[in-house]
Amino acid sequence: REVIQALRDEFEFQTVANLGGIDYIEEKQFAVFYHLFSYTHKVVVPLKVFLPREDGVSLPSVASVYKAANWLERETYDMYGIHFEGHPDMRRILCPEDWEGYPLRKDYKTPDYYRGIPVPLYFEGESNGGGGH
Image 1 (tube, helix red, strand yellow):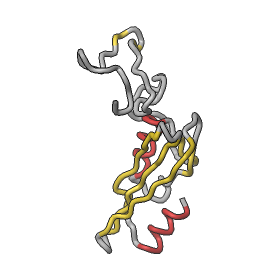
Image 2 (cartoon, one colour):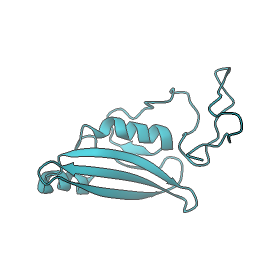
Image 3 (spheres, helix red, strand yellow):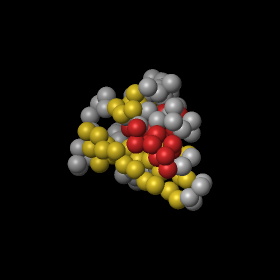
Image 4 (spheres, one colour):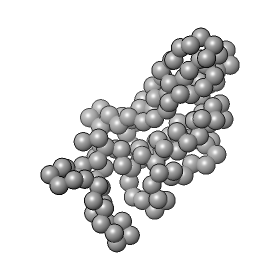
C-alpha cells in the first residue's frame, strides 16, 4: 500500500487502470497485479505482488488510495479468495454470497447444482474445469 500511495503522491500516478489476480498453481502462489496510470506523464507502471497460494491469504487494500480499486479488489476476492485488509466492503460482487469456492482458481470445479438448479457452465465436449482451462 505504501508503494502505491507514494507512486500516486510523489510520481503523479493518478489512477489504477486495472487490478486483478493470477493463480500460479504449479508455483503455489497467487499474484495481485496493478496497472497504475499517470495522466501527467502518459505512462502505465505495472506492479505485481506475490502471495502464498493458501486460503485466507491477504494484503492491504488500496481502495483508500484509489477509489477505482474498490470493486476491482472485490472482484479479485470473489474470483480468487484473496482478501484485502482494510477494504470498506469486502464481500462478493459477482457470485452470490453463498457460492462455494473461487471460480478463477485453476483447481476450481464448477458445482453441478446451485440451490437445486443445474449449473451448465460448459458446452458439450468441453471440460468442467475452472480457472481458465
